[in-house]
Length: 397
Image (cartoon, rainbow, N blue to C red; front, side, top):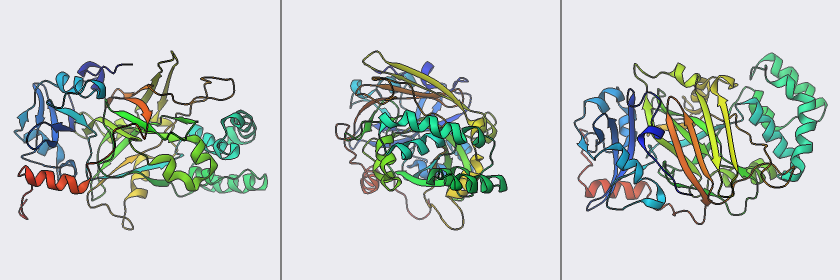
C-alpha cells in the first residue's frame, strides 16, 4: 500500500498560519540533517542560524528565531513531503525526519481512563489476547463507572484504592492512573525517532499490539512548554501485559517511535489551551482490507498536560537538551480483526494516520523492527556531521 503525502493532508487545518518547524535530511557532500521552517513560498533550511532543533527550542523566543532567520529555500513543501514516503524516496532530494534531535523522548502512560483500564486488562490477561474479553467484562463491571470522575491524587482516589485492594483488584496501572504520581518513562533514545512517511517497527515476537496516537509536548531545558507535535507510541500489549518490568522491551525498539510531521510552536495562533482541546484521530488501513477509525479528545485526560510536564522536568530531574513528552492516549482498540475475541493487532503493511486539526497528520507504514531501516545516526554522528558542514560554532554561539 503506497503512502501519499502532500500539504493538503499533512498540514494543520489552518495551513501555514502558525509557526511550523521540523527537520529534513539534505543531500550534499556531506549530506546531513537540517532544522527547517515552513513558509508560504516553501520550506526553508535554518542551518545557518540554528544547527539543531534542541538549540531552537531552547531559545528565549523560538518563534522569533524561526520567523526572522533568512534561511535557504529547499523548494515547495509538496515536493519534500512526496519524497518523504519511504518507498518513493530519492536520496538526491530532501525529505522529512522526525522534528526533534538531541531532546530526550519521554512518555506518560495511563493518563486516560479507557486506556488505563486496558492496561489493567492486559495485566489480568497476562498478555494473552484470548483472555482479554473476559478480563475486560469483569473489570469494567467492577470499577469502570467509578474511575471516570476520579481526580488523580485526591482523597476520593485514596478511598477508591483502599476499596479495590479489599476486592483484590488493585493494579500498578491504577496506581499511576489515579495515584499522586504519573507514570513517566523513556520512550526512545535521542535521534532514534522516525518522521512522517517512514516505516514504524513492531517487534517480531509480538502478536498483540497497536498504535498509540498522542499529542506530544515540546519542552525547553528550563521547563517551558513551547509547542506540540503528534506521536505514535507504538505499543506491544502482549509484552507489557506479561510484566510491567518489560516496559523497555515493549516500548523502545527500532523504529517504534514516530513523531511529526512538524512542531507547531506556541504563538498568537496556537496555545496550550488549544493542546488541551485537541481531538486526535487515528486511522488504520490494512492490505487485507481491514480499516479502523477512532477519535479521542484531550479533554478526557485525567491530568492536566502542565502537571505531566512538571512531573517530567523539575528541580529533581533536568534535561539540558530539552525533551518531548508523549501525554498518553485514549485509544485502546478492542475491535476484532481476525478471530472473535482476539481484538486488534497490526499486520505488515498497515498504514497508520494520526491527525489533529491543529497539528496536521503523521503517516507511517507498519513493518517489523528487524526489517525497518536500522538506526545508525546517533549523537556522535550528528556532531561529526555538523562539524564537517561547518555548522558548529565556538563558545560565542
